[in-house]
Length: 232
Image (cartoon, rainbow, N blue to C red; front, side):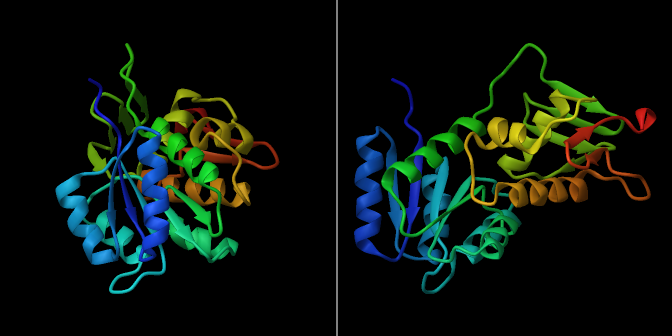
């Protein structure tokens, strides 16, 4: 029997937890719930979810605090934030805290389900005949899911990893924001241009070597390209 994907739903609203839990169990997923941030951290250790649906505004510890704590531990479990705050800066704040996606309340169960399906799909590792990509001192090994720069391991979130992999698969070719959204996120997002720009910025900071130009270059009005410094 195939193992079910495990979802951890964290929200201080009991009715919402139960609604989401019932919907995902009906869809064939395994579900656990938590009512606050502290309980969520404990459940992550014991339950080891494949994805966390995390409310931002909660007592004891906010969703942002939970995400930051997990990322500081090196835990890259995908996170989908739920929040009543719908300003672009709120979304960027959530992504900066380590989230992979952000849905605003009120939402439809169908929308959350689509987001969850897309995140789970893009975070599964598909073993291929060729799984090693290298550009100068940057290397991505898709078998071990490891990224290194000059031999030193770089910690990336699942979305950052998939974005880098997509760019490296298209080394030397310009890819547009629309192509990135389609291949990495799998659907259209609110203010999607800002989301892509933010993630490109995160990647540049993490994979750039001191004193050297970034391997990821912006082609204004067109998109982004990753290529060897020898080709620039």
